[in-house]
Length: 449
Image (tube, rainbow, N blue to C red; front, side, top):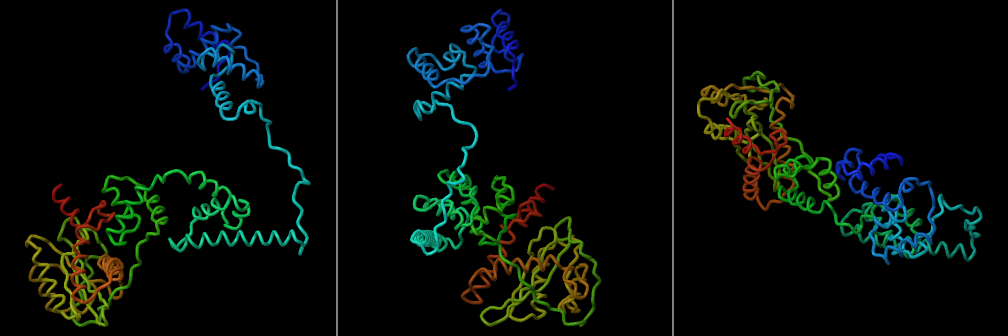
């Protein structure tokens, strides 16, 4: 609030007392609250024009006590009492009242300004080596270290990791037994960090509910989501949380996504016709069944190898179909192709892209495509980036499914793979699909069309 001179205050009071304008009008015209103006008027009523002539003064403890006694005996309000005794601000009187109630008459005495002077000779002398005092200090230090590390070890065994907050908690618990300064040096945390956590120790965690939601999302997706996709899932639940906050909370909870693995290579040289790279890394499709990509990957389970062949739609990343076999034979690809053709209505101008694997060079494969008017495209030799989308899917699937779960048998693996593909298509959200799953995105686009 702007400061006002004695003349400005007096003019505002007289404007009101003349009866031409009300409290709110006068207060609004000079830019103060009606409460402030009311206080000026009361001061004027009790002290006249001298009420606004206030040279700086220090009130004695006895004067403060007299004012408080008057207010209690007469039953006057803080505002009226301040006006009677010509105290500039009622808040000053309120502070006196609070100080007296908490600390008595001593609390009303003025405090010395500035830092207290330190006596240079007050530093405790270092005891001589081998003396009784030195041995006692060493014993006390060892006792402190033993107590501190015992508590730290207990915390780390429960949660696997010790944080700065945990260290601050241990220091707080031992503060009555050992000097805080020595404990902070032992814990290797700054003094400011310790007092920050102490200040917030009794307060409820403002992110407690959000942490439960993030943990439930992480568990529901079996640890497959990183902080960005968890952020997207929160937005789907109408919770707009910044991705940095989600990342911080996940770090606090010890949650992180898994690492991707490499894929199987099916290139065996030129055994048939090599198609041109028509796709040319243009992975954007404007509608379903416009661009498909396909490839094969390898699993090792129970001492055996399994091969997965799948087709992915570049429009929304949806897995169109897949086949699984113990050998990477051509039937693995042909069966998958027949299943995929069932999705077509005959009106599409479809392009299928693959690497130069021997399956896709076969005449049977190329004939199946040409009979249905499908354009074939192949990656350049030894260039994995030309078919990056399907390879990315295999990496995700291995890290989220193969290396995450335990399987009892090959049959159990097949059932779980079917569940994962269904999860991938219907529930696994993607940032590039506006936080929707592949099927949700396709259905949403069809409804909007």
